[in-house]
Image 1 (tube, helix red, strand yellow):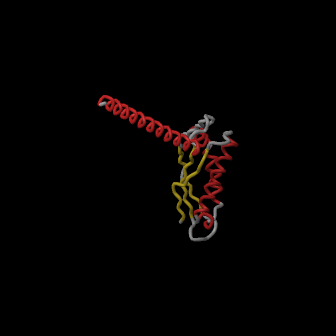
Image 2 (cartoon, rainbow, N blue to C red):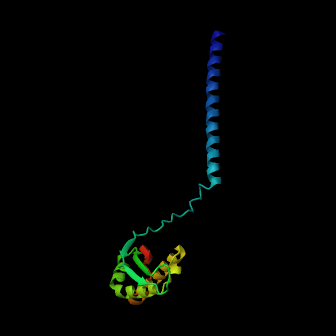
Image 3 (cartoon, rainbow, N blue to C red):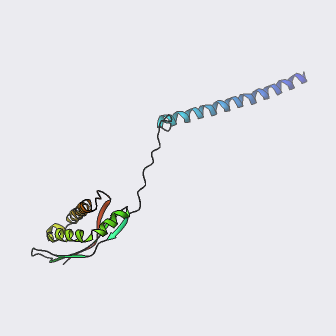
Length: 164
């Protein structure tokens, strides 16, 4: 009988180990299923239909300083002169080469444009931004007419803006 009890104890220990292993495997399966369901509900799995779209990288900006320009205000007011230093920005050296090649035309048109500016118009931040936009559009028009460059010049920046 002693032998029979030993066999029953070994059988009980073996069945307990099997039961623990079965419960552990079922627990891991449940955890795995819940993680997979969560990922699908959140949107992590798009069914392989997702396309990877690479955004084009922009070239580094290149700046070209323009000569200092000084104009007289035509109206009597708190300031009589406007001194402006500017730089233009593009990402293609060919565009800036065209600006340099047509600099006499650009300077002429910008001086004419700046000559018509009124103190009250450029005394505010909005006025300065509007002036920068006008200057950019004028330079772009000159490049389109003389160099057949339709786009590429992106911005005009004031590096000095003095009214006195």
